[in-house]
Image (cartoon, rainbow, N blue to C red; front, top):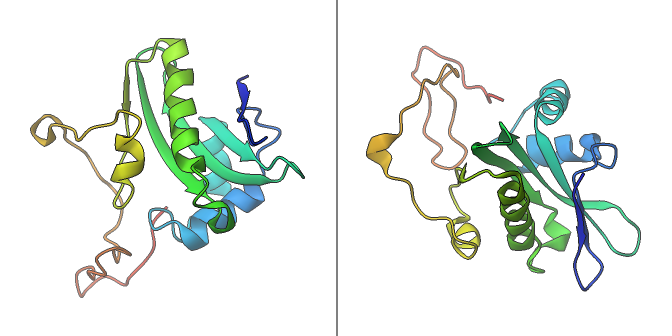
Length: 165
């Protein structure tokens, strides 16, 4: 397990027993554009198969941020579900968390970390992330068409709008 504490007392830990998955589920399914409507079981399964990083408040130890990493722990990682509680934003916790994830994965030998973001490019650029070469990447996406919460584009008329996990 990994643990680090900032000068102001905030702590990051990968201890899965410290993660408040009910709180994480609430954040993701109600406030995170990429996970709106994600059910609690899916959140639990996703974190069970990943490395979860929690950030904890210095005074009361409550969880104030989260990140999830899907990785083979040797060569490759996908950083996702990064979320900072609205009341804690503006303290640099997101950048600190992403940097701690990057550094911990480097300790494991992971040399490539990817992520996807619609609105936080600056956070990740501060710690060394850069745009990918799009012509190298491909995907196979079996999700149903959804209303995109960022662009509000509707799915085809013959499909009911849904939110996909």
